[in-house]
View 1 (tube, rainbow, N blue to C red):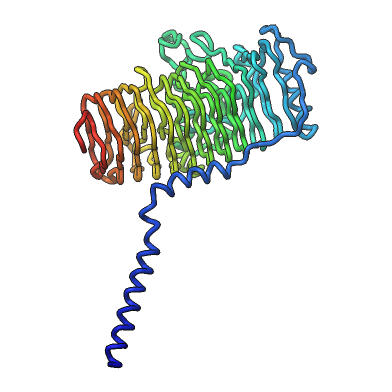
View 2: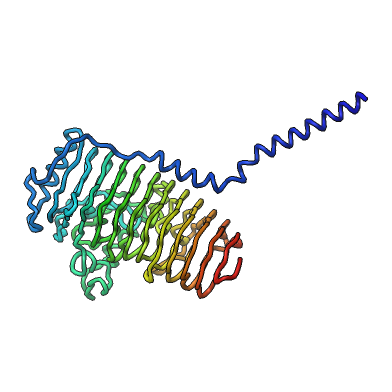
Length: 473
């Protein structure tokens, strides 16, 4: 009897132990719910800048709203006075205000009233002296961005007005080298030896950034809005149009909110929003109608990305509309320091000129990694090429092969309806040395894709309650 009691005690202990182990493991089964709770947590922890209740109207600093007078000094004086007084709101009233570059300072909210338009000068010398900036994922000294903040904290651009970069086929765009954008054969352009080839060589050789001198005499276009090494940034409500190059480029910045912004700009390389080496970014309620990627998450090109070694991470995109563009939400191609923890939900993507919905692009010169991408509740009306494209052979130019094998894993799409899937439902080109891993589709239904699947060098895509062209996968 005593022996039986001992056995019973041991049995009960084993059962309790198993139950306890089971309970400890239980959270793993609620991973999906936890994933978007993480997105909510990222948003909650982003600091929205606050400002004293003080206003500084640029008209009080000599500005004229005739669209012709150079108001650069009025902007400089108003921003300096606002910052030196402890911060507040610099007001741009209704009217058209011509200016050179605007440099923001800490604790300043540049606010465009409804009906205000800021026109940026077409005199390229106005964007000198050069500043520390970046071009296609490589740091350099170049023309100032049209709106620039360097190592500032607690800054904002708000309102209902418009920033017009005045780039067109006669200003900035021809430098891209494409006749579609006004380039004339035989005139200078960015692929000339003293431009991109020179910058690429400096990147490869590790030339100090201070010695990468471009600007006047070179043809590398400035970005539109660039917070560089900034913290607590808000961009809200305004419209951007006619950009020289990338539109919103937050680089090496933390705690960035882009809310209710409209980007309507169809020039060359007119990406809508490019977080680079940045973390804790919230892009919400925006509309992108662009000449390139709508949102492109980046982290440096080749050696420069590996030198800086700051991944872009904790990025939430929600309630946005994507119209024209090369991709809706994109990671790459300047991605050498990696991207992780990207959350996309409740967005609409629809245009005959939208090439892909979700896109990852890199190669073995870029290398880098993309991991933990979660996409949920997306409505796709029409895309040209693919709903999901992962390409590890990306390259516009020749010689894009190197020794840095990319790593791409944990890409999850859920609750997505696609009316016209384009050429491919899913298009993946991984590498034999490191195949793409853990791509899942849950409740994804794609109609009218010419080729349902084209998958190379990837673990099998895992489908749950999903279909392409009416066929369950």
